[in-house]
Length: 195
Image 1 (cartoon, rainbow, N blue to C red):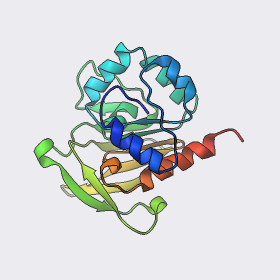
Image 2: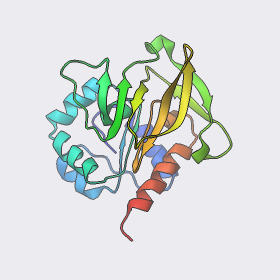
Image 3: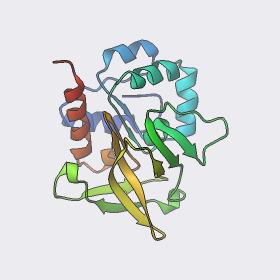
Image 4: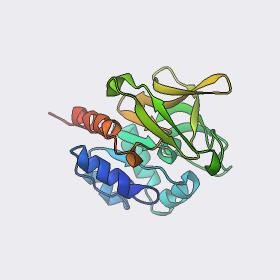
């Protein structure tokens, strides 16, 4: 899991409870020891600066391009977007998801909210989704599967997506105690491992 900034601890607990052995990545050499990567929520502009300062940006881009399974929540989703709207002029992403994403789409911190989402891949029970200064997806490329959307202002906005071995949510499943998103990612990683 990328451990330069954000909600690393809660994701580590959720991954461990879902059967994974989380490894914290802070240096390029640590990338070689992982089978999948979680990019937590946090502050995407700070995360971008730290990833570049620690020399992680290019090695992570290369690993993602080479097929490393990756899951990003909130700021992690921003870090995985190929294109962002509402970012800083100098903001960079790791890319990997063929999406255009709007930062802070739902508003400021005071506009944070919760919603129940139906995500077929996670079973019949709704997922309680916590949105905190969350992004939404404005456009998806042809290889992107929308898993869940939220309606706002008469329009439906994707908030959970998958593109092959890449998974992203604009909400924070690590804070609810519901392990289904993390279990899905652990299954994605297990399916990508050489047999």
